[in-house]
Length: 299
Image (tube, rainbow, N blue to C red):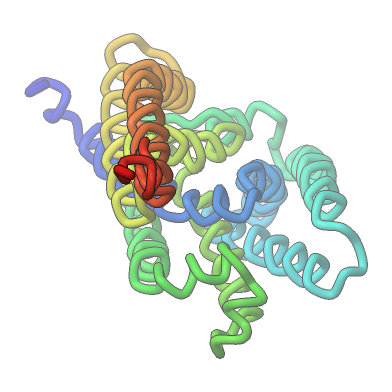
């Protein structure tokens, strides 16, 4: 581990991995709650257009990816809100339009080719520059502030929009803010996890945490813990084995999910049996016990 930290690019990669491990599950828990777990994939494909636009204009691909993904996420949310197309159709347009636009623009760029997109598609620990890390830190701070600071409001909106609206919450603004936050999370994670796998890191740690915890707060904390653990472990493993970090991180996350599920299933069954027994006992007591009143009256 000491020789790994001797390399400046690995120091940057590990710090980026920690930030990704925090932000991806912190936003993903709301997408899971809204049954939009695949939304990260759609935004990731849109980010391809932003990355290619960066190569075409000669600017940092992170900043162009931010602009394009935020625009795409906001448009998708507005389309869903006003009902001009169903949410799944809007997501499909993000998928196909983002992929096609990225491939088209990268081939129009000077000395551009599809190979330039590889590090963004699958992640690369060697390409996190000091400038990239600065951008990632700024974006991660904003994402964490929104996801954690507004957790009660966002949870209410994701749980029941109508109830949230009745209570006076700005539902439309919160939905747009969540869409923008999801877009920023994708750009934060694309250097480490890759655009094709970022959605998995937003969803799998949350799904794993749900198997072992109760309540939103505990699930959020556990999901972030799992996200940080698999992000760091996958990045370290990719350094020593020379494989894409995104693939390593996602495989580890799925393995953690499988282990937690295997351990939690018997516990959940025992809890269900105890709850059923307690309910049956309560019903028996409320009905008067095994001997209803009057059965023991002597004449």
